[in-house]
Length: 258
Image (cartoon, rainbow, N blue to C red; front, side, top):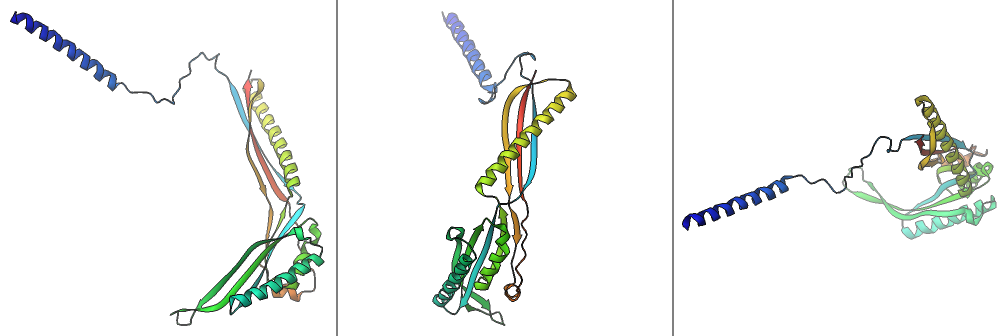
Protein backbone atom coordinates (compact mmCIF):
# COMPACT_ATOMS: atom_id res chain seq x y z
CA UNK A 1 0.00 0.00 0.00
CA UNK A 2 2.79 2.42 0.92
CA UNK A 3 4.55 1.58 -2.34
CA UNK A 4 1.38 2.38 -4.30
CA UNK A 5 1.05 5.76 -2.60
CA UNK A 6 4.65 6.60 -3.46
CA UNK A 7 3.94 5.83 -7.10
CA UNK A 8 0.94 8.21 -7.12
CA UNK A 9 2.93 11.02 -5.50
CA UNK A 10 5.74 10.54 -8.02
CA UNK A 11 3.26 10.75 -10.94
CA UNK A 12 1.72 13.92 -9.56
CA UNK A 13 5.18 15.44 -9.16
CA UNK A 14 6.09 14.66 -12.76
CA UNK A 15 2.84 16.23 -14.05
CA UNK A 16 3.48 19.34 -11.93
CA UNK A 17 7.01 19.70 -13.32
CA UNK A 18 5.71 19.38 -16.87
CA UNK A 19 3.08 22.08 -16.26
CA UNK A 20 5.66 24.47 -14.74
CA UNK A 21 7.98 23.91 -17.69
CA UNK A 22 5.17 24.59 -20.17
CA UNK A 23 4.16 27.90 -18.58
CA UNK A 24 7.79 28.99 -18.25
CA UNK A 25 8.40 28.32 -21.93
CA UNK A 26 5.27 30.28 -22.80
CA UNK A 27 6.46 33.31 -20.85
CA UNK A 28 9.89 33.22 -22.51
CA UNK A 29 8.45 33.52 -26.04
CA UNK A 30 8.80 37.19 -27.11
CA UNK A 31 5.54 38.94 -27.95
CA UNK A 32 5.43 40.92 -31.20
CA UNK A 33 4.28 44.55 -30.85
CA UNK A 34 0.64 45.04 -31.69
CA UNK A 35 1.41 47.68 -34.33
CA UNK A 36 3.57 45.36 -36.44
CA UNK A 37 1.58 43.85 -39.31
CA UNK A 38 2.98 41.34 -41.73
CA UNK A 39 1.54 41.16 -45.24
CA UNK A 40 2.21 38.07 -47.27
CA UNK A 41 1.60 37.42 -50.89
CA UNK A 42 3.30 36.64 -54.16
CA UNK A 43 5.25 39.37 -56.00
CA UNK A 44 2.47 39.46 -58.59
CA UNK A 45 -0.06 40.33 -55.89
CA UNK A 46 1.95 43.27 -54.49
CA UNK A 47 1.23 46.72 -55.99
CA UNK A 48 4.09 48.35 -57.86
CA UNK A 49 4.28 52.15 -57.75
CA UNK A 50 6.54 54.99 -58.86
CA UNK A 51 6.68 58.35 -57.10
CA UNK A 52 7.98 61.72 -58.30
CA UNK A 53 8.13 65.26 -56.92
CA UNK A 54 7.69 68.53 -58.79
CA UNK A 55 8.92 71.84 -57.36
CA UNK A 56 8.59 75.24 -59.01
CA UNK A 57 9.46 78.77 -57.96
CA UNK A 58 7.84 81.74 -59.66
CA UNK A 59 8.49 85.46 -59.47
CA UNK A 60 5.28 87.46 -59.41
CA UNK A 61 4.84 91.22 -59.65
CA UNK A 62 3.36 92.60 -56.39
CA UNK A 63 0.01 94.38 -56.41
CA UNK A 64 0.23 96.14 -53.04
CA UNK A 65 2.78 97.79 -50.73
CA UNK A 66 2.87 97.78 -46.92
CA UNK A 67 4.69 100.70 -45.29
CA UNK A 68 5.64 100.41 -41.61
CA UNK A 69 6.46 103.67 -39.82
CA UNK A 70 6.38 105.13 -36.31
CA UNK A 71 6.01 108.36 -34.40
CA UNK A 72 8.29 108.50 -31.34
CA UNK A 73 8.35 111.19 -28.66
CA UNK A 74 10.45 111.59 -25.51
CA UNK A 75 9.47 113.82 -22.56
CA UNK A 76 10.11 114.13 -18.84
CA UNK A 77 6.67 112.76 -17.95
CA UNK A 78 4.55 110.04 -19.49
CA UNK A 79 1.55 112.31 -19.96
CA UNK A 80 3.51 114.96 -21.86
CA UNK A 81 5.17 112.29 -24.00
CA UNK A 82 1.77 110.81 -24.87
CA UNK A 83 0.25 114.22 -25.59
CA UNK A 84 3.10 115.21 -27.91
CA UNK A 85 2.88 111.84 -29.65
CA UNK A 86 -0.86 112.13 -30.18
CA UNK A 87 -0.45 115.51 -31.88
CA UNK A 88 2.26 114.25 -34.23
CA UNK A 89 0.37 111.01 -34.99
CA UNK A 90 -2.73 113.02 -35.92
CA UNK A 91 -0.64 115.23 -38.19
CA UNK A 92 0.77 112.13 -39.89
CA UNK A 93 -2.69 110.64 -40.44
CA UNK A 94 -3.95 113.92 -41.90
CA UNK A 95 -0.95 114.11 -44.25
CA UNK A 96 -1.52 110.50 -45.36
CA UNK A 97 -5.19 111.19 -46.14
CA UNK A 98 -4.22 114.30 -48.11
CA UNK A 99 -1.83 112.08 -50.08
CA UNK A 100 -4.74 109.82 -51.06
CA UNK A 101 -4.53 107.12 -48.38
CA UNK A 102 -7.92 105.88 -47.11
CA UNK A 103 -8.79 105.33 -43.44
CA UNK A 104 -9.20 101.62 -44.15
CA UNK A 105 -5.60 101.50 -45.42
CA UNK A 106 -4.13 102.83 -42.12
CA UNK A 107 -3.75 100.41 -39.20
CA UNK A 108 -2.16 100.86 -35.77
CA UNK A 109 0.17 97.93 -35.15
CA UNK A 110 1.95 98.92 -31.93
CA UNK A 111 1.61 101.48 -29.13
CA UNK A 112 3.72 101.70 -26.00
CA UNK A 113 4.94 104.12 -23.32
CA UNK A 114 8.19 103.23 -21.56
CA UNK A 115 10.52 105.03 -19.18
CA UNK A 116 14.08 105.07 -20.47
CA UNK A 117 17.20 104.97 -18.31
CA UNK A 118 20.92 105.50 -18.83
CA UNK A 119 23.97 104.90 -16.65
CA UNK A 120 25.79 107.80 -15.03
CA UNK A 121 29.39 108.42 -16.05
CA UNK A 122 30.78 106.43 -13.12
CA UNK A 123 28.39 103.52 -13.86
CA UNK A 124 27.14 103.46 -10.28
CA UNK A 125 23.43 103.94 -10.98
CA UNK A 126 20.92 104.49 -13.75
CA UNK A 127 19.06 107.75 -14.14
CA UNK A 128 15.84 108.39 -16.01
CA UNK A 129 16.07 109.95 -19.48
CA UNK A 130 12.32 110.41 -19.66
CA UNK A 131 9.33 108.59 -21.12
CA UNK A 132 9.26 107.43 -24.73
CA UNK A 133 5.95 106.93 -26.50
CA UNK A 134 5.94 104.92 -29.71
CA UNK A 135 2.97 104.78 -32.08
CA UNK A 136 3.55 102.43 -35.02
CA UNK A 137 1.24 102.17 -38.02
CA UNK A 138 0.98 100.12 -41.19
CA UNK A 139 -0.14 101.67 -44.46
CA UNK A 140 -1.37 99.37 -47.24
CA UNK A 141 -1.65 100.86 -50.72
CA UNK A 142 -2.48 99.47 -54.15
CA UNK A 143 -0.82 102.18 -56.24
CA UNK A 144 2.84 101.20 -55.92
CA UNK A 145 4.04 104.30 -57.78
CA UNK A 146 2.91 106.43 -54.81
CA UNK A 147 5.05 104.56 -52.24
CA UNK A 148 7.84 107.15 -52.18
CA UNK A 149 5.55 110.19 -52.03
CA UNK A 150 3.52 108.65 -49.18
CA UNK A 151 6.67 107.99 -47.16
CA UNK A 152 7.77 111.59 -47.72
CA UNK A 153 4.36 112.94 -46.68
CA UNK A 154 4.40 110.92 -43.44
CA UNK A 155 7.95 111.95 -42.55
CA UNK A 156 7.31 115.62 -43.31
CA UNK A 157 4.28 115.50 -40.98
CA UNK A 158 6.20 114.04 -38.04
CA UNK A 159 6.89 110.34 -38.55
CA UNK A 160 10.47 109.84 -37.37
CA UNK A 161 11.04 106.16 -38.06
CA UNK A 162 10.34 104.11 -41.20
CA UNK A 163 11.02 100.48 -40.29
CA UNK A 164 10.48 98.68 -43.57
CA UNK A 165 8.45 98.48 -46.74
CA UNK A 166 7.06 95.20 -48.03
CA UNK A 167 5.88 94.60 -51.58
CA UNK A 168 3.26 91.89 -51.28
CA UNK A 169 0.34 90.17 -52.95
CA UNK A 170 -3.29 90.73 -52.08
CA UNK A 171 -5.32 87.68 -51.05
CA UNK A 172 -6.77 87.39 -54.55
CA UNK A 173 -3.35 87.64 -56.18
CA UNK A 174 -1.91 85.13 -53.69
CA UNK A 175 -4.61 82.60 -54.58
CA UNK A 176 -4.01 83.03 -58.33
CA UNK A 177 -0.25 82.66 -57.88
CA UNK A 178 -0.72 79.57 -55.70
CA UNK A 179 -2.96 77.82 -58.21
CA UNK A 180 -0.53 78.53 -61.05
CA UNK A 181 2.44 77.29 -59.00
CA UNK A 182 0.63 74.09 -58.00
CA UNK A 183 -0.39 73.43 -61.62
CA UNK A 184 3.18 73.84 -62.83
CA UNK A 185 4.52 71.68 -59.99
CA UNK A 186 2.06 68.89 -60.81
CA UNK A 187 3.06 69.02 -64.49
CA UNK A 188 6.72 68.81 -63.53
CA UNK A 189 6.06 65.80 -61.29
CA UNK A 190 4.25 64.05 -64.15
CA UNK A 191 7.07 64.79 -66.61
CA UNK A 192 9.67 63.43 -64.17
CA UNK A 193 7.62 60.28 -63.56
CA UNK A 194 7.28 59.68 -67.30
CA UNK A 195 11.03 60.11 -67.80
CA UNK A 196 11.82 57.65 -64.99
CA UNK A 197 9.31 55.12 -66.31
CA UNK A 198 10.77 55.42 -69.81
CA UNK A 199 14.27 54.87 -68.49
CA UNK A 200 13.15 51.77 -66.59
CA UNK A 201 11.15 50.39 -69.49
CA UNK A 202 7.85 50.36 -67.63
CA UNK A 203 4.48 51.98 -68.29
CA UNK A 204 2.76 54.39 -65.93
CA UNK A 205 -0.73 53.45 -64.83
CA UNK A 206 -3.33 55.49 -62.99
CA UNK A 207 -2.49 58.00 -60.25
CA UNK A 208 -2.40 56.37 -56.83
CA UNK A 209 -2.15 59.56 -54.74
CA UNK A 210 -1.33 63.27 -55.01
CA UNK A 211 0.07 65.36 -52.15
CA UNK A 212 0.73 69.08 -51.85
CA UNK A 213 3.95 68.99 -49.85
CA UNK A 214 4.69 72.70 -49.55
CA UNK A 215 3.63 76.16 -50.63
CA UNK A 216 5.68 79.25 -49.82
CA UNK A 217 4.98 82.91 -50.42
CA UNK A 218 7.80 85.36 -49.69
CA UNK A 219 7.10 89.11 -49.80
CA UNK A 220 9.83 91.44 -51.03
CA UNK A 221 11.27 93.24 -47.99
CA UNK A 222 13.02 96.60 -48.05
CA UNK A 223 14.51 97.66 -44.72
CA UNK A 224 14.39 101.41 -44.22
CA UNK A 225 15.76 102.44 -40.85
CA UNK A 226 15.87 105.90 -42.35
CA UNK A 227 17.76 108.95 -41.19
CA UNK A 228 14.82 111.31 -40.86
CA UNK A 229 16.91 114.50 -41.11
CA UNK A 230 18.27 113.46 -44.49
CA UNK A 231 14.77 112.82 -45.81
CA UNK A 232 13.18 116.00 -44.50
CA UNK A 233 16.02 118.14 -45.84
CA UNK A 234 15.75 116.60 -49.31
CA UNK A 235 13.21 118.18 -51.65
CA UNK A 236 13.29 115.30 -54.11
CA UNK A 237 10.83 112.42 -53.78
CA UNK A 238 12.26 109.33 -52.13
CA UNK A 239 12.83 106.77 -54.92
CA UNK A 240 11.39 103.37 -54.01
CA UNK A 241 11.21 100.65 -56.66
CA UNK A 242 9.08 97.52 -56.04
CA UNK A 243 10.64 94.08 -56.40
CA UNK A 244 9.08 90.78 -57.44
CA UNK A 245 7.51 88.40 -54.94
CA UNK A 246 8.68 84.77 -54.74
CA UNK A 247 6.08 81.98 -54.84
CA UNK A 248 7.01 78.28 -54.72
CA UNK A 249 5.11 75.00 -54.54
CA UNK A 250 5.92 71.29 -54.32
CA UNK A 251 3.65 68.44 -55.39
CA UNK A 252 4.25 64.68 -54.94
CA UNK A 253 2.53 62.16 -57.19
CA UNK A 254 2.49 58.36 -56.89
CA UNK A 255 1.65 56.35 -60.03
CA UNK A 256 0.83 52.69 -60.31
CA UNK A 257 3.06 50.76 -62.69
CA UNK A 258 1.27 48.58 -65.25
